[in-house]
Structures are given as structure tokens and as C-alpha cells.
Length: 64
Image (cartoon, rainbow, N blue to C red; front, side):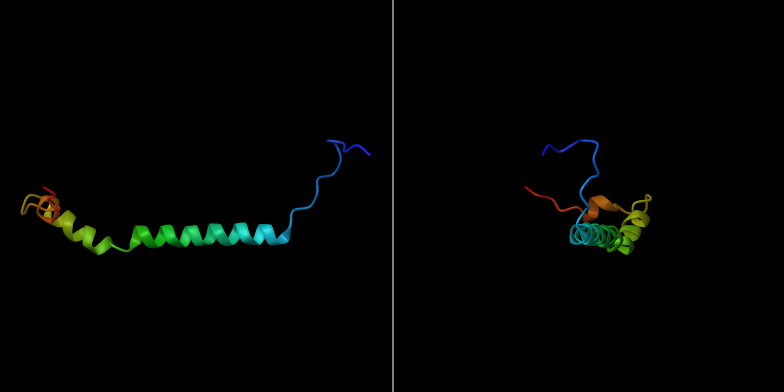
């Protein structure tokens, strides 16, 4: 019995779909956390970098 390319496709596994959705949600939460965790520190550095202080240069770690 030959498989026709025009026949109906096999159903996707419900477990596979749930796993993909869970992975995408975890990635979304991780990206949101990483982009929002240091917002206050960034605002302080940006306000210091407006000519009054050294801003980023003062906070930068100098590696010999």
C-alpha cells in the first residue's frame, strides 16, 4: 500500500503541542525577567551619564 501525498496528514500529538506551548511560555517569562530586572539600576546610570558625573565609565570594571 503506497502512501499518497494528497491524503490526510496524521494528527499531531496533544502532548507534543502542550510541550511546545510550555517551552514557549517559559522562554517568554525568562526573557521578560531578564529585560526587566535591572531597570532601576539602568535609570540611575543613565541619569548620572548626563554630564554631571562619569556615569557608565565610573561603573565600568577595568580589566588589566
